Image (cartoon, one colour):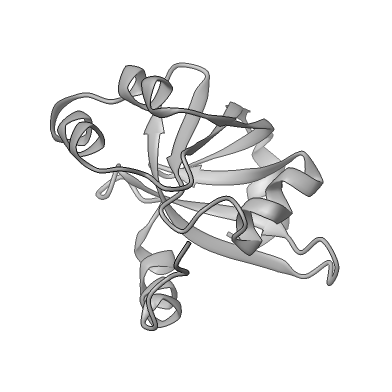
Length: 137
């Protein structure tokens, strides 16, 4: 499976500043900790929200560092629409779960595009108020 395109790191530097705000509801910022380094990372992602979960497409596969970090830690924090969520129970799911979470144009894109890595589903709960301040967001 091919990895991210060469410009992905540069795109991510810009996207992480824009993602997670109310004006771009499809984009979120996923905060995770390196499984070996212990370093904190921020990764821009597109999310499909449900009442209790986020479903995230994995176009670069299941072996990307952020996916491996989230699975090793058992969760992460996601900032979406200006709010922080504690996310747990990372589980690989198939297209049917993503389709159930999607509507409108997102649903049509999912129907037409194969997602080589499938999807990652995370259970979400609002993060405690103080966690956003402690994490430096």
